[in-house]
Length: 107
Ligand code: FES
Image (cartoon, rainbow, N blue to C red; front, side):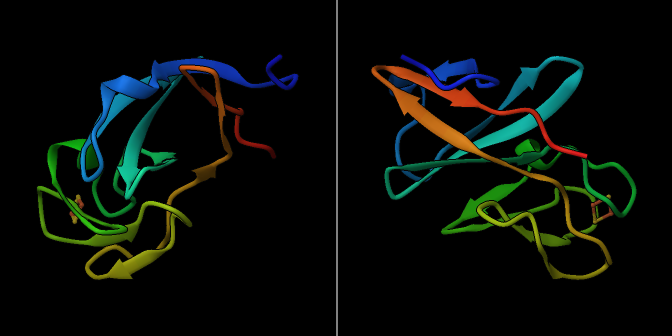
């Protein structure tokens, strides 16, 4: 049984380790990534100038924005490298059977 508040955004077979893709949760677009078998989700819009992070490159836990090369940690949402100054929202992810479930951001 899924926990309250979590919504299905993908299936576990959708992404192999090292892959990522955009998913939608309500009105928000998220980046869902598989890092060594662990799924994580962050906001998909770069805080620098709105680049679509899922169009960039994923290297371990770091995603590089395709526009100007800012890097973010896909587990924590923290900004790792400039020119972005602020991190993006990180979301809680749960696996329920074959479903990848994500909780809406709080606050
Ligand atoms: S929009 Fe992402 S680094 Fe500029």
